[in-house]
Amino acid sequence: ASVAAGETGEEFIVQPLVQTLKFLNNFVDNANQEVGKSNANEQEIYVPTLDVILCPNVAIEENVTADDLAFEVIDSLVQKTIASKLAAAISDTYYLTSEAYGNSTDGSEPSERAQLWNTLLNDYQKAGVCDEAYEMTTWTLTRAADLETGLTSVQIEFNNTGNTEQDQACMLTLALAAASYPDVCSVEMREPVGTSNHYATWLTQSELTNERPFFDVGLNGEGQTVTISDTGIDQNNCYFLDNENPASATYNTNSRKIAQYVPFVDTSDYQYGHGTHVAGTVAGKRDDATGAADGIAPGAKLAFADIGNSAGSLRLPNDYELLSVGRPYSKIHSASWGSEFPFYTTQSRNFDQFMYENDDFLILVAAGNSGAGDAPQTVGSPATGKNIIAVGAHHNTDDSRPRGALGPSYIADFSSRGPTSDGRTKPDIISVGKAVLSAGAVPSEFGECDGKIPGPNSSSGGLLSLQGTSMATPVAAGTAAIIRQYFEEGYYPTGERNPSNAMDNPSGALIKAVLINGAQYLSGVDNGASGITPISPYDNNQNFGRVSLQYSVNLAGKTNVDLQVFDRESILDGDSK
Image 1: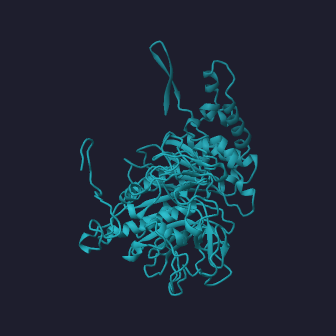
Image 2: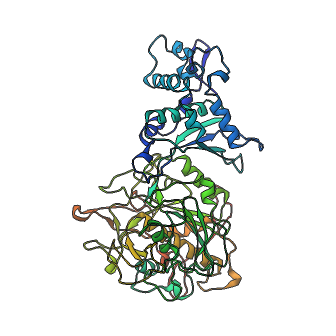
Image 3: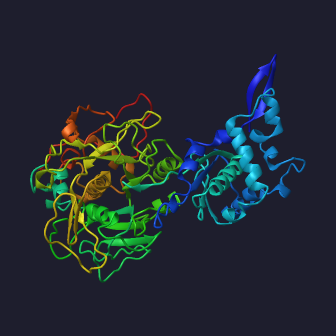
């Protein structure tokens, strides 16, 4: 690849496209900051990862594997196989660190960054000190399903990276080697991610105490599967317990609650863990009675991707592998985790691309909990995606409300705010995320269940109350499952169940549109003693507003929504329906 960098008379001076121009989002600074986080805590499992994206319409032959690519890129860093054997040093084979670059600067000193790369290449590659680190890398190749609309990517994990200068140097030089290939358009450092309903059910359905009109007519998520990626589930908690069909990595249609459990990290959750609470919020259901913490869609089943260890830290698989858990049964993915990186990253794009290629699928992602002080640009990837739904948090109601909180018309002060780095409004919607009661993991017990109802942000027996956009996201995901059931069982357009009106496999875009269209505006941000921040519709605090089923779809005799639906219909610019 090359670029016209200047001209003399009528002639252009053409220079090669410098490899480092392919690095996205403060690559070098992020690499130096994030590499080695695994050493900070023995149970921390953050693994530095590079996303290498090939240019549009670049195809990888079917017989080429990820290991083949790894060999070719790593081999290019070995002096003896460099194409230019006349190079005085390995650095002279890369334009930014070469004699040609030095000559192009009219005798001035190379830039500070060029000197950095020169030092890294000569000090670490000539001696072969990175050989062991490169041998421990894991390469994953994901081919674009359609070269016209998708991009092929390679993910490189540094499995044995520690907190040393050498580790940083080895990863940076490998990134430079990958960027030197003409078919590579970008290289990005993946940011580390972290984990960002008794009352919530009636609050989203009617806003009237203990009134659940959708449950009353059988709209409880039955027939739906929601995938969750999180730290794990305590499968012996009464809200998930199934002695006849224990969960496995293979989807089981006969399961009562957990139809699939894929152990990317392990098969359990920690004491009062994040994942058990999130799963219970979506679809937890006691088998023997109505539970104090039954989920938003208690009739739904769960597919679960265990991506967390016993300390609650996360390690993600390849994006496409993660999002495929539960498919084709699952049509919704709830992700109560994310980074603090407000850019449109490779992972954001991968999430959007997966929804594009699987148009019956909807992904909901926690916006993040970094909004205190009305901090802007705090929604992190992958919630920065365009097709997905980023979910913020508002207060709860009744005696589940923490003392002094203003109630459900107010956004929680911690809820992250937009805009994204490219100016798009975020989050997309707001949901109950304060003092959410759900299942609590107690791995040392079997069948732990209801007891004394815990107060806000505390635990008791098999119950746990938590706050965060991590809690708001499964509330919205469970609501999405009920909306899917509404269309699939023929409630549209009359508001009464009619099998002849059943919609076959509604699109994820339709479910998203219905959720957003029915959202209600909020009154402000509750900052506690610091007062209330005024907000406006469609701003970077609330965007479309809070989730509300009663304003989203028509239910005969219960709601009054005049809804007209068009799904998977094309419309040209200037036309109307």
